[in-house]
Image (tube, rainbow, N blue to C red):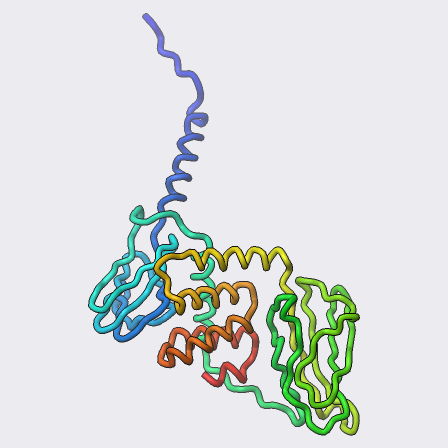
Amino acid sequence: MHKRCFCGSIPGLLIPIFFLLILFCSSAFSATGVLLRVKGKVNIESHNGTSPAKTGMRLNPGDTIRNLDGTASVILSDGKMLAIKKGANFTLPTDNETGSRNTLIAKLMDTIGETTLIGKGPTVKAMVRGDGEVMLIYPFNSCITSDQLRFEWEKIEGVEGVDIFLKAPSPAYRYSFKVEPGKTRAAFPKNSPPLLPGTRYYWKVTGSGRVDPKALTSKLCWFSILGQEQVKKMNTEMAEIDAIRNLDENDRDFLKANLLISYGLYHQAADILERQLQEFPGDKGIKDLLVGLFKKTKNTGEAAKY
């Protein structure tokens, strides 16, 4: 009588099965989405009930976009872009009904959700300015690219000159330079000690001559120069957004604004969102996002405008 032999161990057989399970789980996920543009009356129906749709709203698997008398555009987590026409409905796919997750879109969705949540927080009041306080305009607590390095501030009256001070704790950096009176903008002098990408620098402006220096000065603001590798990666992701099909220019700009936010380029992002809010003044989603951006930069004066 032949005896059956079992060659190999159970744990050894379980290893390939384990990796197959990992592969299956990684390829099957629940589709999520985000609304890019809402016009007219559109509702979102979910397990929590029905709520009005707005730009930037996060959508979950099984949620239904119901257009009552409006239109909406949505981008799914696999990168597919959909335009929901007037009177049409769309339900987000559930497990195994969609493709693989798009890393860039997932990052943008997280940025939209985080910034919008900040914008929907407690209302901020513009900070009370002290006597003689000078307001800085650019850069204002934001990352910038090296080609956008400059300094802007409001005009200082009754002074003989303007001094700009820069400093950083690590690596230690201290530098100042003078600007002609009446100027409200200055380039970084070419013969200045170089600024290192990724380092947070603090700067302020002070009026000089004929006045008490403490009477006409600004508070400190920070800025950081984005490194070349980050700029290269961002440009690649910008090209990915340009390659998304069925995306109109407003929706494309909305995604690009959030990509800029994810890299800390708040000034460029704010420019885009402010233009969009002028075009769509009733869009509360854009407003929440813009307010959230200004709160991130601690620019309460701008946040309070909205």
